Image 1 (cartoon, one colour):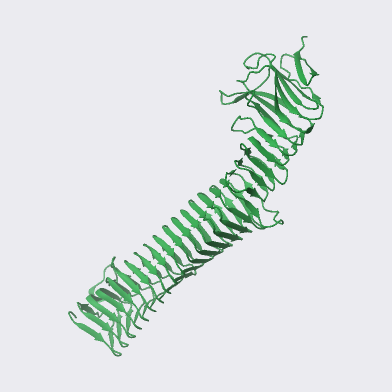
Image 2 (image 1 turned 90 degrees about the vertical axis):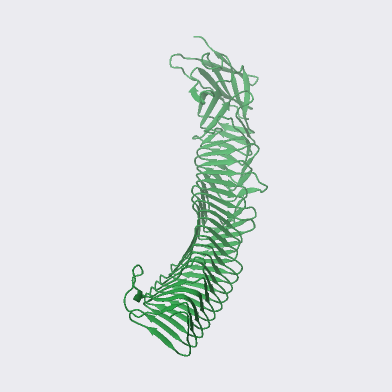
Length: 635
């Protein structure tokens, strides 16, 4: 039929079955008043190689379905190259049993209380790239049983429309998808792919359940009062996800490779949020039994936001995790792990019972790590990476025990409830304070610094006064007691008369273990005493003393002072190590004396000597006016 108008009204029925076909060319087809158009092909059709008797064609026509009419496709193929395609009132398109409906139409409208039902692995295709599909009023789109609906252009759903997909069905929109008003999208074990942008506005709702998938290549946004609800489902966004409304996750995953901005409300139960790009979390986040993972990008907790996790895991595999000034992070029975990333702590973290914190990457602290109550005793911050306290206007405090096996840089004053170092390095920078409510315990590794202060007592089983990577002398004040145990080592470095190690202990110093004196080969002195340690009182003595020299022009290569003799003595005010070296490679000439003075109140004299392999040197000492005199006795 061509150049005509066909109207089916009343309860009229047009039916084609078997291998018959209907062809409309340049005409108007109108179905209303309970009319039915039924198309069926009993034979199997091949979409790649079908014959003319296997499809029905509507060419250059206008299609209008209204007033409770039905257009049914039963295992058949229908081709529409139309000017206008409208379904309204209570009209229904019903496709089933592997039917294929191909629409080449620019303007397509689904309105009123009309319905499109696509079932039984059928395919509905809207093929024109610049086409628009407008679904309004209370109309419905229902896909199930592995059916597909592909829209090459844009798709807008608004008012109170309903979109439902189930049982492995698929909706593909290659342009823009917009859902607004009170429109709802519900999926149950189904898939939605949006290759352009996707927006949920006003009071629109998207509900995904039972292993459903939403994949958006462009920008996915949730605005106004819209809601995204995920239950055992996944959202993946290679582009941008923007949230200013509400997202609810249960046993689900959100994966964002591009930009993830949220200033709304996100709740996650037993779920995973994985960011590979840049994620900025504002508003409120509440995670329970969930994982927040920074795989390779940036996760920022924006200022004045709330980020609360219970029974959860925060993992920074790589990339950056930043929580801003005035942001608040609360962790209850939650682990925070920085595996190989970068953490910028500009706001406070409050930890509750059952939490763990560890850093194997870089952790810069500009605020505090607080505990919820006094009964939080089992939480430890484990550092195996690089931890630094940085300058800020905030008073920095870590109220949980801190164990270091990596590197700690105190670049800004920091107070800790308990500090223990099993290995690694702690360096206290110029003018900064490391404070603690308990004794600072250096069980291994190194403790050094320049013009720093330890506002606590100090015990040493590691090395005090030396940084492996530099030969800069240490200068520290200990406001409390110093106790060096048998496994401890004190290192004194002398570069010049003005550049040398210096310790000031306000209370009692107890000596044991080893004292190592390292002298710059460029240093020349004649009978000079240099104060390097000062105490109020002291007890004990070093079990071993070593004298070494190092060459700053040969990568600080060390050598033993085989040609040097030493004497260690204590009186009421000093403990001195006197070194006398023979002429030779060392620039410490014969008779030159380096006096290393350690003030105390206990009078003890310890005599030590170095024995050369071929020459026996006899050393005598005499205490006169607080100065040791060393002389060599001839045989």
